[in-house]
Length: 223
Image 1: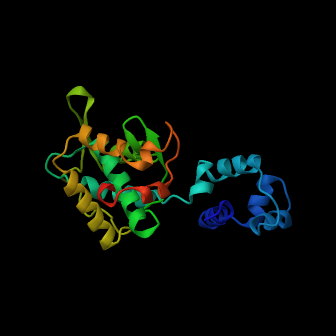
Image 2: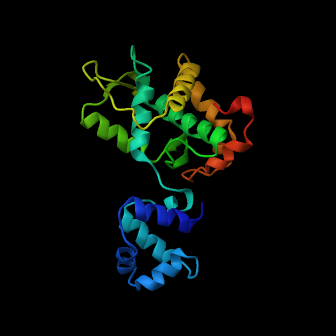
């Protein structure tokens, strides 16, 4: 999808009219309509203004709308596969990356559409740390700090009826398969694995990792 396509999708998703956005940009609705129709240019400054207006990173206009609610369900569903001892925070971040990029490899679209960046310890979703904080503060996860700074994340025993309605049966199956693949591996092993993949190797530190890069990966090395 193009920048304009993503802009239109984001505007409609957030319930804004063309006139709302035009007012924010200081232009007429007719001029803004021409932008959406690809008959007038959208400047970098206007993109920055729109990113602030919609409360999203500028990159979202280039990479598509992020479904953070679905990513949150992916997060909880993955944690729920490690009921006995929990899952290390870093391993969880990598499993979610595998889920999104493996889904893209098979379907040319990710599960959640969230942005991942190239970090020292492998790909990390922009939404991961904030969602971790929110889920912890609302009692939907618990975090146990172990030695060497390892944080174990688990679902509280008293938490029942978790909402996974945004995940299809196939998506749940994919996440379960990925979790089973890495269940007995330590954190460093999974980090090293992501470091040998095309998406991480092709990007600079803090750069957004395009989902398309996973298509260059060896089929046996997608997750």
